[in-house]
Image (tube, rainbow, N blue to C red; front, side, top):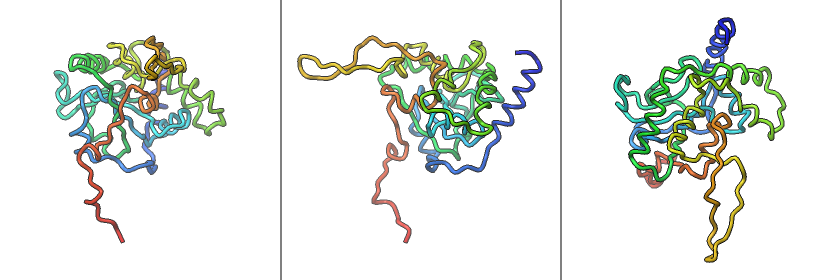
Length: 250
């Protein structure tokens, strides 16, 4: 990308990153509950409130427009105090941030199943190694086409419109950054093909063990939510929610 395109891309990224006054579909989680429940390797989905978020939510027909990987506090030397997430920002590129960044937004925890501490650490370090890489501004140019105004794109074509980007390994978007981290341990996110259930002699149902993953450039924040390989963890429930403690307004 030449200098002119880079300058335009940075201006566009700044414009699209501007937060808007938009009500979320649900209230944000208690930050203290999030901090207590999150584990290294968890994916935190975010219902963003920027212009760019609107395009992603429209194209994926999803609540979620952003994703970050929880790496834990002090996960690497040099990380600022309190930083515990790694994500890809349109303006700042791949960075580390604290939970307060998303404290006012609706979020969801998606947890990979069955990872050993070593495997979690491998995923975390793969993401941390990308800190400092640039955001893939080619993705911003492509997404911007679907903002002015929101186009009547048939549902079956919307996912293909997000298979974007330059493919430069020093550039990333949020969902591909995380997908590549999990790829380092061959952890599945979504299959490229629909799977047919089969029955064993005992009558149990199972999936074929051969797994053909979607390419990381095809994955979106929504895919971590719908993936059969990630558990949905709700902080309020995990922290001991009891409906009897609620005081109902008259």
